[in-house]
Each structure stands twice: as C-alpha cells, then as structure tokens.
Image 1: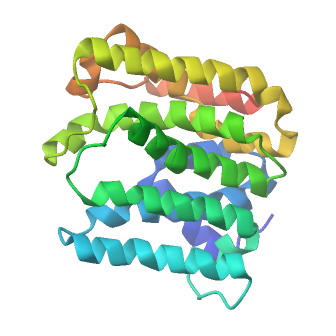
Image 2: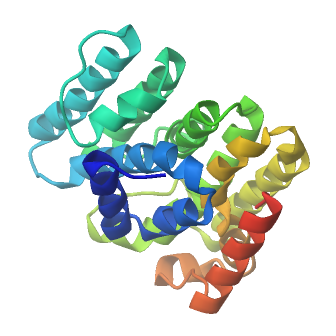
Length: 258
C-alpha cells in the first residue's frame, strides 16, 4: 500500500504527538494503517486543541472547526481540503462521523477548570473519547460490537488518564472525583473489570477490525499498577519498560487481543 501525502502527514503527526497509538498502528496489518492514521491524527488534533490557548473562546472555536468538518463528512457534501480531514472523509460513514462528533463534544471538558460533575460524567468522558475512537476505527475496518469498544475504551482511556493526572494537577485541574489512594485503587480495579469483560467478547470482533483494539495493549498492566500501588498515579510513575511495551504490543498484534 502506497501512502499519499495526506496519509504520510497523518502518520507523521501521530508519530510525533501520540507515540503509543503510532506504535499500535504500525503493529496493525498494512492495509489497516490507511484507516487508523487519519483517525489517530484527528484524535490528536482534537485532544490538543483545548491546550493550545488560554482563551476558552478560541479553544471552543477550534473544537467547533472539527465538528463542522465532521458534519460535512456526515452529510456527504463538499468536504474542506485539509491534510487530516481529507483522508478522514475517505474512511468514515455518517455513523462514524457522528461518533467522532460526540468525541469532540466530550473534549470541551478539557477547556475549563471545572471538575467532573460526578462519576457518571467521568465515565461518559472516557467512553466518548477513547471508546468512540475505538468504535469508529472498528466500524471503518469492518465492524465492532459497541460494548467491546465501550469497555476497552473505558479501560484504556482510564489508564491514559491516570498517567496524565500529575500534568493535569500541575495545570490547576481537579482530574479525579476522589483522589484518596483507596478510591484511586478502586477506580483502577473497576477499569480492570471492564477490560476483563471486553477481553471476554473480543472473539466477536471481525478479524480486520481487531487492529482497532491494539491501542489498549498497555491498559491491563497500567491499571494493575494503579490498583496495587495507587501512589504511583500522583507520583507520575505508572508505566512499562521499553521491553515490556514492545513485548505486550507484539503479543497483542499476533493474537488480536489485548
């Protein structure tokens, strides 16, 4: 498969800004990468949009730009020329565009300093960001059960969010509903439970769509660390060795399971 300039630009964006998803995409079958790189480049651009400015109105406008682009894709009309939007339009149907629109809407939380309203709000944020990205990718690759995407998205999104807690706190945010060690450990155990449920249903995922599961390859190990030693969350020491990362990713790529 030959990448055109847009796909190459998407891959480079992801490589620089989201190395974990870049590695996951590179571990996927070659034919899946033309789907994954535009989706992951989109996700990266949306995720960092709220952090590029201190002005909430400008951040809102940046997110709205992406929602307008997704609306163009969903309605099947003329789509703006853009190195990410153009290849994205080739892999999304109206349903996929709708999922990503909800992802963008959920990212509005990142603009402001308000804490999550409650546990349900936090859960919805993870499901609509990480989960909808997995679901949209699986949909574009041949089919993905919503519950698998939701459960894996929650677990992998939670793992990533816990790793980001020190940075969010340094920005003056209150990222966790309850930051006590016992509450953090319970949160991680809840993520592990949802990961276990997702693993039990991964056999229902169409083989080509299993590439969409690969970004969750670290979730189990990271959540287990947080569950057994929640102090690692605040200390910013959740993580795997490079050997551990590579070994887990290789196993996931070979088995199609995370």
